[in-house]
Amino acid sequence: MSEENQEIKDVNGVDASRLLSFIEKIERLEEEKKAIQSDIKDVFDEAKSANFDVKAMKEIIKLRKKDDMERQEEDFMLDTYKTALGMV
Image 1 (cartoon, rainbow, N blue to C red):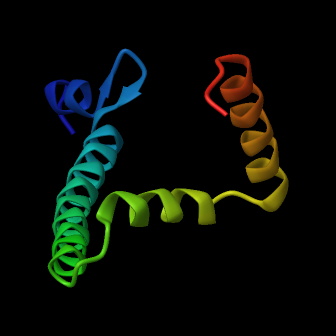
Image 2: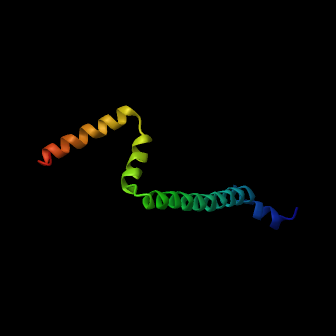
Image 3: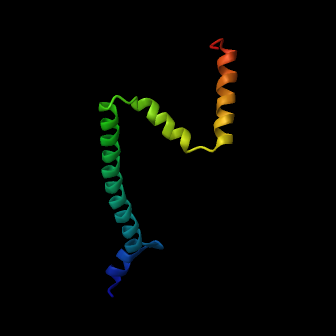
């Protein structure tokens, strides 16, 4: 291996070929993510056309990701703040 090729493979202690491998993998995953996001948008569009409230569905999805204790703590804080602002 020539010295020039070695510099490409190892630059200041950085394994360039391994770095490139990670970068390319992330780029592929980003493309897959775009495709999945497009699929999710299509499902929301379908739900909207069936007269479902997409905003409410997104909120339900966020809530389902949390455990019961986390939801209760959030609800308590929201109720406390709403009461403090006279919104209840």
